[in-house]
Image (cartoon, rainbow, N blue to C red):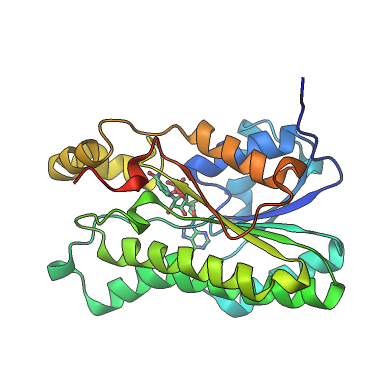
Length: 257
Ligand SMILES: NC(=O)c1ccc[n+]([C@@H]2O[C@H](COP(=O)([O-])OP(=O)(O)OC[C@H]3O[C@@H](n4cnc5c(N)ncnc54)[C@H](O)[C@@H]3O)[C@@H](O)[C@H]2O)c1
């Protein structure tokens, strides 16, 4: 039997209090990793949630942070490296949106969704890579994308474009930093029956019909996405870089429209 043992590893996770993140936090913590958790939620609320997830206080550090604030995000990254100089795994997981049809979405709202889903991951990369290059650490950065990066979707134009940009950015970074020993990968879920998409799926019949058509009725579980993270964070994936790992029942292949 092969067991995944992440003891001794420190993993930094953004968007750590979300619906998919719940299962990532539970699995990565159960595998023995120390977690540095980042989310916009206030600390007291996060601590209560983590307690309900049965995560021990000793198993994590929590920072409340809006990741679109690059200055604060960089300070938290730097503080985390002061505490854990060998931290070698970072998950740029935060993201999401509500429905925002193009015609009725203001320029400011379009830019907010794009900044949260794309530029905030660039801010994270800049801060983390500076530390890894300085410390000569062969780090591993993993982003969370979505099948909509490759399958055009209605009513989420800023989000889908941001995820498409994120996937190409990840591959550019994997290439540019390969000589530093840094790896960059992406996990790309299908439509997950949890989190930001659940509400719109339940409330908007047109969105629901579209999703079920392009995914052939198969929605993913947050547990299966967490399993993909567990694998990529493990030594089993040590030679993988520049890849999009799609946990989506194949909906990202994009031949069903
Ligand atoms: N749910 C899906 O169907 C689905 C499908 C494909 C990809 N994804 C991706 O998976 C990831 C998680 O999605 P989810 O559905 O679990 O999301 P979620 O809405 O449940 O969680 C998002 C988390 O991000 C936090 N957050 C929001 N704004 C923030 C900010 N500015 N700074 C820091 N934290 C902030 C929220 O407090 C929340 O805890 C996202 O990147 C999303 O795009 C989700």
